[in-house]
Length: 112
Image (cartoon, rainbow, N blue to C red; front, side):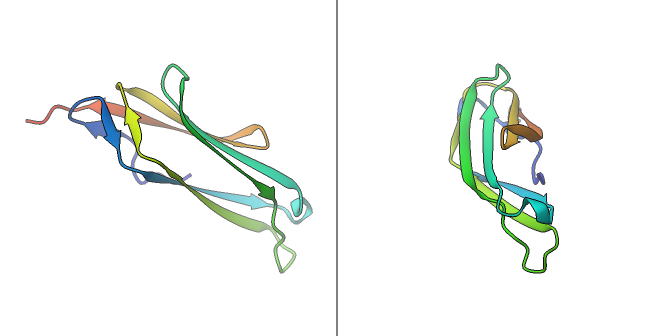
């Protein structure tokens, strides 16, 4: 996961954040080609309450040259309503195993 931003600062809550993208890169060995894959992404609040989640399924692609395969995936998260401040957590699971996690703090920063 590559972060363009690492927190969300807003003047007050609740607030409707505009849509944004989650971009992922996976790398597979040639022996994994054709194997089933399920990618599950979820955003939870600091009480572990789900805010939004996505699932993508398919099979691991084969590299034309017989080498490792890099797979790029992007998910557009819809506009999300943040009701309260806190540390939100983005989790990425691949075939049921957590392969990535990032925290996105939501902060209230009053305007001068």
